[in-house]
Length: 469
Image (cartoon, rainbow, N blue to C red; front, side, top):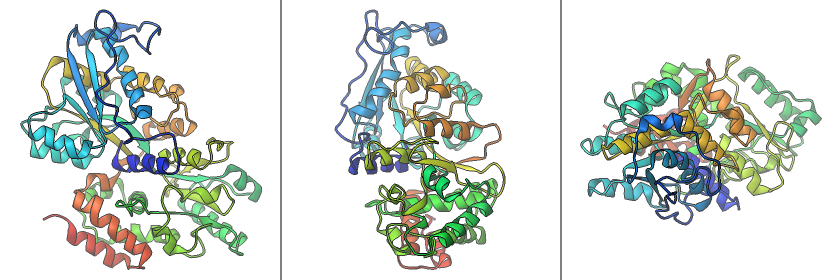
């Protein structure tokens, strides 16, 4: 998971959700070997796996591959452990899974000390870049089989994100879609509102809702960017989405790579575009207060006024589905349910989609490690992981994932949007920036922009000044 995804699930936990990423450690519990070396596919008593697709990995009997991640709770770790079972059964290898709440602090220490895991799931591309740059002799480039899989099954930008100085290091693992607007289908129907197809339609709808509910009992939008030490990150997602709607995808890439400065007119325009909603008292903050309450409202709770009829729309990622169920276990997330989501419109018929995800780095050059890498980039693993995640809340960007295996409707919709042939997809910009900016000044200045009314130009200039020289 990306750092922002992790914050989403942690936020849901704080509100009582069942899912968690960094709860009690899952320890080093790899799958139990079955007779002959592997694990029984799908757990004890499951049907045998068709091993034809695994023959290229060879006989790995007696080999162990260690996998280290930030996914430590039993509820979230078990699907990963289970997803390795077909690989173990067919190759004879054992995958030793370890999830840790201290992952991001401990991994660099372990790498520097020569005690790195064979594979590590990296929740933020910025950390991937840092690990490779600072440990160039200890990170192993992606093997040929895994690279061929990525070339075949993933959009090109997933490979670009995992590359450093022209070398390919990080394979994609999971993904999430961020450019969504959550709403109540019932409230829309009762008021005669339709899903907007373009940004102009969205703003017309926003104004219509404000006029229809001018007594203040409800507002078009609700939002919250409070997230403890990470306060401000939801506002950065707004800016990233607006960058994809005011400029071109190429300009977005240039901005992320600091080829366009933060105080460039195209960036200022994007922030002001977000401000047409977030800084208008007529439009926010339904059920919560005025504009300044956005800065103090926990992002975990910000959409809940929709359930009370006090708010009509809330922009947040696909992973927010866990928060709805934290608010009320009986909430149905579906097109005809209590809450659903539509893609945040753009200027044209196909809106761009902001995404997040995590990647895996290898630290040992061995055939069994390369084989597991190849498995993790294959359709077999994506489908096994979907099968092993009975409650949903996970998806892959692998084009051969069977979408029918995705349990939650929002996961199916997300998958369709991020893998569509004509999709314009870009990775979360702040997760790609240096941490001093992406997880520092960008968060802080956007918070001040909301809470203190700081001007867009001043906020963007302050972020620009903070960019590492």
